[in-house]
Length: 473
Image 1 (cartoon, rainbow, N blue to C red):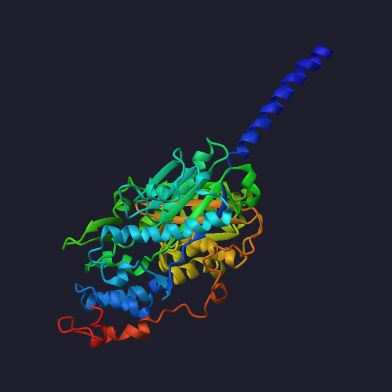
Image 2 (cartoon, rainbow, N blue to C red):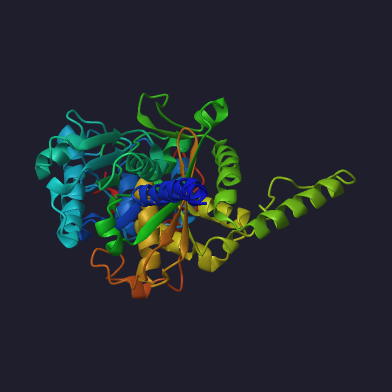
């Protein structure tokens, strides 16, 4: 009898040990956000209505038709007049920016944000094990990551990743890099630095498909501190639940819908093709197909499957008149409390809101971020997240769904769980000084009021800017 007990006990104990070991190791592979710091440039870099008009007036390659196009684009963009631009735009050197202009823009960003984040967290630069930097439109030698390591005298064995040309979805890609490292290495601290270099990328031509980026993109950035250390778990703000990346680069129309190229006059810029909305929708749908089963309860997935089955039967008997604007038909609120949407423009926010059947309350953080900071590329998601935190909406157990898009064409998304109540008292929150004034009663910008007279002009050949704009030229 004793032998039989021994034969049963040993395998049982071994099985329990293996289960414990698996659970214990899994805990060391979790990815937590310990803290993050957004970048708020100084007020002397703020783009007012007058300054924005001056930037347009300085472009001698524009005519009446381009002015009308820009006015319509800016008015409908959802951007306010308190966004920020690089210093080179105010000095007039945007047509021929120097290497020092580009480096200075990045230095000003990361020295401000990294300094504040590490100081507040009590973590020294020497404790950073992993550094991931994503700046899409600027690649220096030595790299910007090397520049950060040199400035803060980080360790020689630090693991470094310098990502370029990843577009507006780069920060989610950086999180993916970090989480995969965390699966292999225990007790690590990672720093993600995400921003965009606008100094060398202001388009000075008159191609309408390339001048749109001047209307949307603004200066900004964020640094995020992540860890899988158990000793830092009690300080964490968010825990990564899942992450999905979708890349449609193999499709020619998706690959070519957002590309850097020269126009007919040899001026460099970013071309936004008319197929961009279609490519974004396709990538978004494919991404949702993968991530939905990971974040939604089974009852909602079964309900959605039943709806699809009924729709298919109905469609076999009658043709739908409009298939272009079909909603997802699935209720994401059953698995998500907050939606952190990339501020690619008003149309992007509206499109995601329609597809996921979101309310205005769900879209408010993205709309307010677009209005106050503009499209800050890959860092825009963190401004949206900071808005939710500043409004004291993030409670323990809540889930935050991040959705981003990028050239290639890519759609990347991830789900974060709030691990403790966030009261909005984070000293590094970029919204803290003016959050009470949001949302404003009216999001309309004053561009039409100030420049609407352009619409009354009819003759492009005789059109001239009024004298009040000559000092900008």
